[in-house]
Length: 297
Image (cartoon, rainbow, N blue to C red; front, side, top):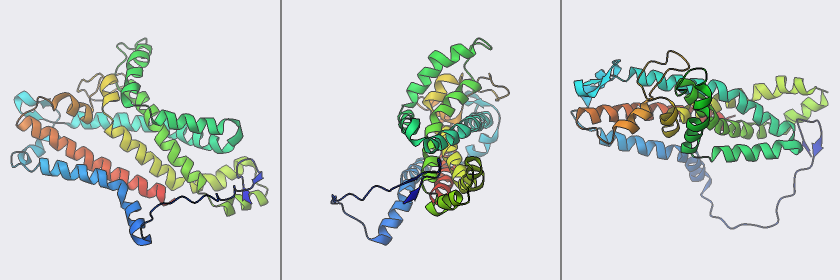
């Protein structure tokens, strides 16, 4: 028997399938190491490729110039402080909006498994599969005109934040949903045997169990938001200003790379590559930390 934690009912686990599927299994030690390290192989490979591309003696003297505020390649000014601040502002704002929604949707799939929970989970999967350019087009065609009623033209920090929040919500919701599935049955049955109400079970058992998973899901969502390019490029305004308000036109590091790398040469190209290296190191570390917290829940 397995305790259904959310509505106080008990349900039987489905019997194991009698059909055996043929599949090759790695030895336990090798398989465990591969499963643990495989999600990091792609970011590590990209990082190695960027390091090789950046092995240029002309690129190293440009590194201190990246800390400046002005980006004027024609005058050899390569400061990306505004781009970095805009990246963290839009990613942080999206995280603030998406985390409560992800937690609520993950809990809802378990609170009402027979009354919309399955449908909500499928909608979450579908939302996670929508291409970023589709989200960007929706933001440009529907969200920006709506926001322009308060502050034309509507493109800026707030529009990019809302679009990014919708994009990272499925990733975070599915991570939290998986963490909820891993709550031990012993805790669920113990809470039911003590006669805890739903609110008490959520407050005393579920939320403490999700503490590390919620942090990991937030880091995964932050990584996705910081690395997004097309959607942000379409709705952010693409002006290198400081993110001083919700309607400020901004440009993120990824958007700057997408806009200027095609025609960049010399020191301009080196500065763009250095900014890309900085971004991929940051996102790789955040991804590794977030995945570690989620898997060690």
